[in-house]
Amino acid sequence: MVVLASTEATHSEPYRGDPHDHQEAEHDYQEGTHGQRLRRFASAEYSKNVKLRRGDRLGPMSAAVADLELPPAVFKTCPWQPRELIDTGLRQWLRCCAPALWDNQVIGMPSRAVDEAWHGLILCTASYSAFCKKAYGEFLHHHPEGGAPAGLARDPIGEQLRRTVVAWTLVAKPGEQCVLWDLDTCVGVDEPWGLDQAHVAAIQDAVTSARGTK
Image 1 (spheres, rainbow, N blue to C red):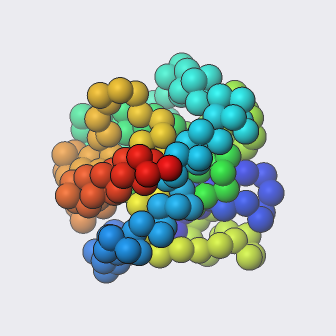
Image 2 (spheres, rainbow, N blue to C red):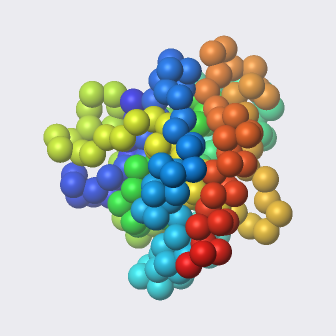
């Protein structure tokens, strides 16, 4: 498991489970339960308040992600091709992390290939630290399985991946498609992670519906 957070150990963090977690965790998308969960991280107030509380930082954050230089070392343990697709996925993941970090929410990593590239980026410590400060205003931590601070909240992988989809709806540009959901399959990762497109569509529809009723 990989976790990521603000500098305070009590803050929640984006998370990545192993491929078996994705296979074993049946996503709970029944309308009742799903609707209740959306109140935590999908309401009209949420998307509005993220911008109000954070001074509309989504624009500058997206610019920082777009300007981020990815040296070859980022892909040292990420051999899959095309690299351009993984580059796009990593940048989309870093954008998803912003609203999650600012609102202390846990999100899940849907791609092993992007996760490996993210590991490589973090190892470029000076560049990664400078990027975090520019994009998020704080450091985005990464904790491997079993290495997270004591007391850090844990939710089922299905719930954390659901939040990733919700986070994407907050940062996506009009008409922009997310490559994260099936990226591993596209680049030929053995035992790929990912999210079924039908599940993604169901979450996005529920987000739209929840915002429309507020």
